[in-house]
Amino acid sequence: MSYGPMKRISQQQDGSERGRLNPDIFHAAATNNTEELQSALRLGQRLDERKPAMLGMTPAHVACLNSSVEFMAAACSEPSLDPWMRDGNGYLPFDHAAARGDKVTAKALLSVMYPQNWAGPAPGGSS
Image 1 (spheres, rainbow, N blue to C red):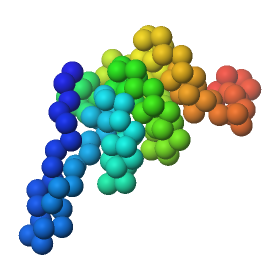
Image 2 (spheres, rainbow, N blue to C red):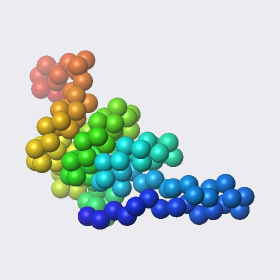
Image 3 (cartoon, rainbow, N blue to C red):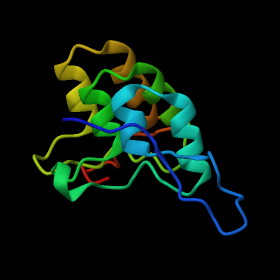
Image 4 (tube, rainbow, N blue to C red):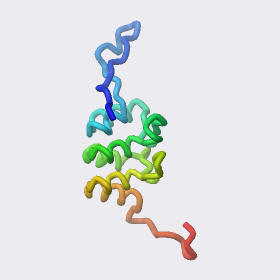
């Protein structure tokens, strides 16, 4: 998949937006760009956004497919990350990280999926 570079926001009438870049959380995920990730989050983009044109992937899926280790390390501390979201093929971000042999990202995702205070499933098999 090809992701374009950050695009410039059009200038406002008062000139206040001149030269400011418009970050894209999916581009940040694909290029392992943590600065763009933080900028995108500050502008209200979220890690649980889906791109229908990309089989319903979230930025975490894109990052794991591209082995964006630093991006995922930063993303794992963000509240909008939902590591349990599946893409259009039914895969979790963890599945993509594991398939690429990215043990660092897989371990980070597991720590979010199963935090230390997680008590496990309820007795009787229901969670």
